[in-house]
Length: 287
Image (tube, rainbow, N blue to C red):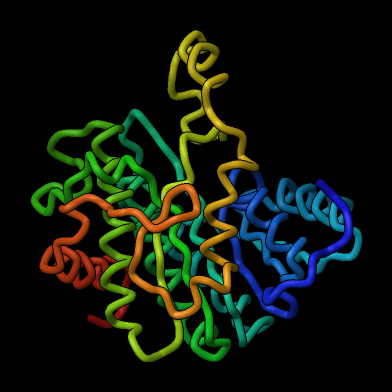
């Protein structure tokens, strides 16, 4: 829906949304723009990003929308994006880590890491750390990690984190989504007192490009009609990013715009700390 902006606490606030060229990310970016935010579309494909930017501007009339290149499969790209983002917006108020992939076959990034682990988890882990100075400068600010109910079926296989011994696309995906929730809880703990909050969420089973081409066409034709639209999938990310009711709320997990319990394994503080320390080394950050 287009139309005039609604007066909102998001007016004048800077929001970065990853994976904003389609699906939930696109609709989240559009929703935050309607609420008055300046939105940065972080997209792997600059041409798609520019097309979405123009589309959102047409919908909102006079929104402030930027786009920038970000490929989470490249830690070099993450560092370049973060440096540019901080230079342009030294005060940032919301980071929505939305981008994600699913792959049935094992693929390796330019950094030598399993692609789902890096794109869904380690890339956002690094990006969040690099943007923390801007988020702290813009506090109160929010980090929103778009995870999935798939985290409930995940486990962190510290002995084979990259799926080198045995690989399952579903197992790798579930692991990456569990890693997001563990990261969120540990990050929230470490950010206590900074006025920067971190929360995770499940957007629902949404009709997006995630996993497109990974399944037989007949499967897509059978299942996709029962999935919800990206616009509905964006409701919870927009809520967690913008609702005044969540001021100061951190370390929680949301679905259908309300707080729910994440899986018991996602609340394992020792596993969260172990994953954190390992991720710092893998991302090239100081331990």
